[in-house]
Figure 1 (tube, rainbow, N blue to C red):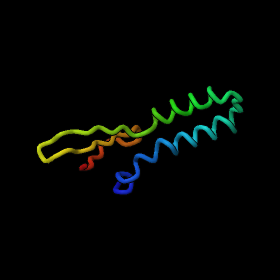
Figure 2: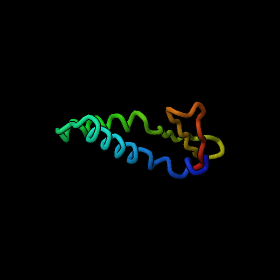
Figure 3: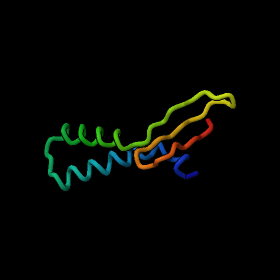
Length: 76
């Protein structure tokens, strides 16, 4: 969990690259605009969402991801 808290921002570019490779190699899409649009949309949907909350103890980031059932809290 600690590693995920530190590098959650890397998931979106990694997902984008993976989806681009899948679209180019498996589906053989020739139009670059269509493949980039699909890859960006899918990486946005599957990437973690971050909210900044103000609590009495200070600001806190909540990281919520599609694949985790519980919310991960990280102090800013």
